[in-house]
Image 1 (cartoon, rainbow, N blue to C red):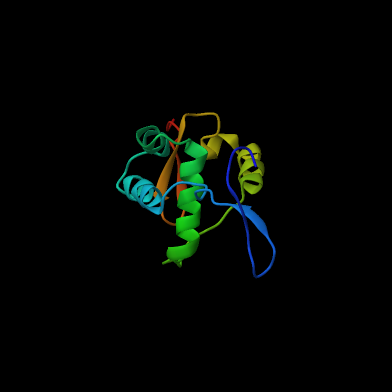
Image 2 (tube, rainbow, N blue to C red):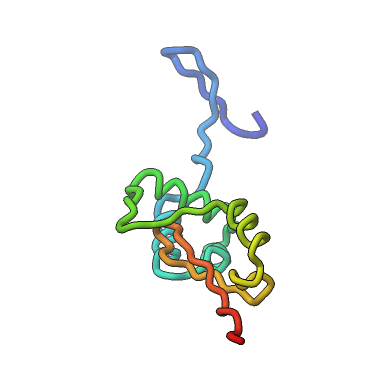
Length: 124
């Protein structure tokens, strides 16, 4: 079939071709994970290894699902949904610093926590 040798399994009667396995070798996937964990971006890792960025992301997700434990949050945290934040800022734009330059700081890349920072209002 398509100039490949066909084989017949004597046990079950299945026809198949002896072709190499699809996908990338495990060593390449492990290298991608190590490069990313070492601080290289997904885009740079993909470029170095000659694969696409979504491929690197898929490998990282597979690795995390298989080997990484989901961390438990430590300490006390206040969780607010973006919708709640929007309504609060809309009600009190002067006290909250709404409309001013704001920066979002990533608290921990492992847990995904972040903090919003705005400049305090000018005192009169």
